[in-house]
Length: 640
Image (cartoon, rainbow, N blue to C red):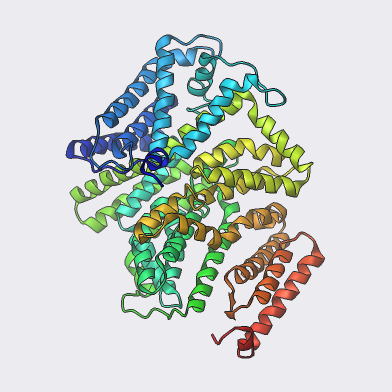
């Protein structure tokens, strides 16, 4: 790849901040986090004012922490400071003009010249921040949609729309809640931000170490122990952080070097960590940004979504755990037997208090359906834990402020993604492209539910190749979900279907943020890691189809239906992993792998006879392998 091409398409390079710049961001973080935590506790501040401020701060931090050119030295530039100052200035201008915006009639009352200049600046700054934070691919996608808004009037046929003036487009994109300041940015500011702050403080007070030690005590001494520790610890930490990238950086710093030392290749070690960390966005109690967006878009309580997501998420982790188990046996890795592996009860006795904020979080989410308030209470419960660990009020204060700083920096990617997604959603709304694409999907699938699901999957995966998870869900929810709902797929399974595939964008090349984070630690090619991640997570691409036709997997239906669907899905996962990894009790030859694949697919059908055949085939193959392991040596198998 040429240097000029890399400069064009690659995200910006993290900068080495000077003392003044670090202090400036530190103060911004302290003020911003404090305000949004106060709002989470019930203190009232005008919501639009806060959204203007949130966007301005997120854009400013993006420009100050990332260079425009990935090949530049890590030192700063005047352009970064100018862009940051403009971001804050535009936000302040919007805040000053907010009383007028609230009183005016959108699309009727004209915008002043200053309003139009501020709106254009906001769009340009969002696009440049997107290029720095996420990459040029997403900028191109957004520009294509914006170009459709400008030139769609010249297209003949069903995709024609009426002419739109610059003022109309700006009004829709910037000065209404259908665009930048719509649902996506609202969820990022008022919900995700507090959860990310909770995860950052948990990390600062040793929560990452606790989850690692807990996982190590459970599976550290098994065959392939380090890889299994990565799976379990990433699941535990990810279920609280909800951020694949933060999960990789926190747990991967321990697990990836440990896996490499035991003989796993850097690519495989990075892929295991990235795949396991991505599942954190699917595992309650704190799922990823997409789940919060789903709650806001659909009106389904977050607690209901979290309960429904438990079983599919556990199956996801079961598939990864079995995959690394099989790989460890095939490659001949020995069980770890180091003195560093702690005892489970010792870890619980030492660090039991970490369960207190987690219990508070789960209880208030499920019992009272107040997600952001539960995160604020759990955040407060971390303060005495931090004080207990530091034994110093001064150090506790420093840890809290540092966590605020961490949280704001982590929010740059989420905030920018949600803002730029608003540009696309606004374009879809004013051109009615949503209805046109949904109709096209319906016609293409000829009303067939399976084909519609496959087309929706392709749409979400293609979007995920160039966008982060929040942007993928925000777009797919308005592009693909209506086609599913038109076929009478219930709201919860339809949108959770999209959440699953949107979350896979964290490991889907070329924009695979979790794979890139793992690659930096493993010192391996992130593209190779991303491709291997897709193989390790292959079952995750099947699970959404399963819960569409087996709602018991989402804990919907009678107890008998739920038990039957859970059992068949679990057995299907075991069979499919055996087929993809080539191991169940012994290494498997291609014929046996194919038979397990057939058994797994039959088990997830909705018809009784094929499912029964799949069950019989799985049981017969498993008994055959278990009882005849030595005989199977001539098939290419070996002793366990």
